[in-house]
Image (cartoon, rainbow, N blue to C red; front, side, top):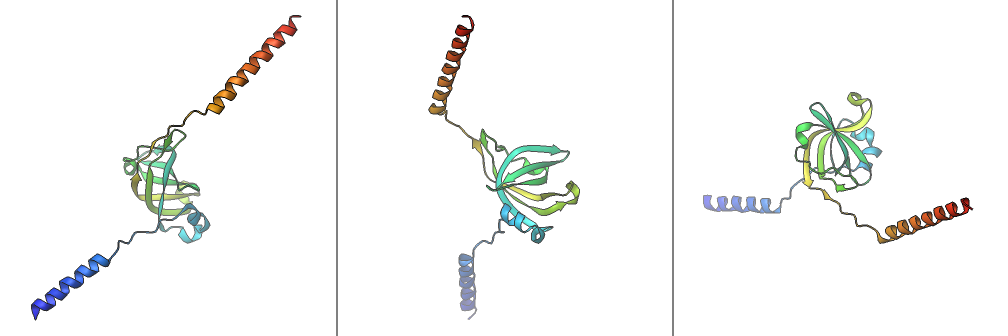
Length: 163
């Protein structure tokens, strides 16, 4: 009888393990946070997006901005948390995609009333990359033709001025 109940217990555990799914924290968007500032104020949130702009070092902490595609939100974090971040988004680079976990402040008393997230964890999801922007032939032609027109008008002006 003990073997049967042990076998049943093992089978039940296997079924539960196989049928279970991982539970992940819900990612808040910038729209969620901005439209529900009172609801999220002082609560732990998860926010995901691209690191953009400048990383500003302030002692042993840093300010960085994370853009989820709609709006960038300021993140205040210990400097050690951003060691893995290599690409900061700008015109020439696509920034690293990170997931930030931290306390949301709609009016942070520590930072002059700014809306921010004080990070307790920053995970890099994907690495950024350099963006190669091809030169537009149309723009090159417009530039060359404009230069030619300017030179022609300059030559005409000098020619008629000397007469």
